[in-house]
Length: 311
Image (cartoon, rainbow, N blue to C red; front, side):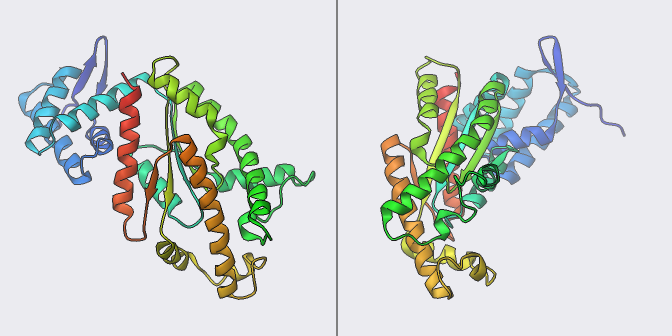
């Protein structure tokens, strides 16, 4: 038996109802993955059983919202679904920044958050840093060995070197950020070289958007931090014998390297913490065994920022 496609009409245009797309949007609204599949399947079944193969957007949403309520998802999730519909229709630029020192789970959380938000673009500042190194290797602006993997006598010398790296990475990000803003795209940027004090222009654009003084734009930055004990766990999970050669500038033994590495990571966290506090950027605690809770917090922050901007 051939099942005809359901066409959802938007005035003079239509799109074919997709259970996959509906389930993805439901996941963005913080409906569980399993329930999103059940709900989208149930909507398709209701429409087909009724013989309604041509429906308006309003009729499709009415069926969807009724089934969402049956599964325990009420007004809050329905409002989020409508929010995502407007967000996608208006093509509002979204820039999510996952800031933090080394070995706090930035890459993992950024990837998982991208899956939650149905985003395909995740940019790591490590890649931008490498490109910057090759671009400036002749004039000596940057060394190939990161600041965090080197010894410095004072905190001031360390931060000065680290900030130069951040400025170079920031310059490399400008082209991508301009593209996102001009084309109404979404991106998650994560990495150790995201210095919040260098993004005053994004903060201003975001504030103007919330006050309706500027073009719609969503900026959702947050700083990941952890306790010294948890950071030790992160570092232990990250350690590999091959790192002895890579981190030879810090020492000749694992113990010596780990001591210097923790010192440098702590320097960066203090610097980033001060910058984020001055910019009003949320600080989120994380742990090796608490990724799920951290991911929920990041997800909620992004949705709240969307709600503040998307009319």
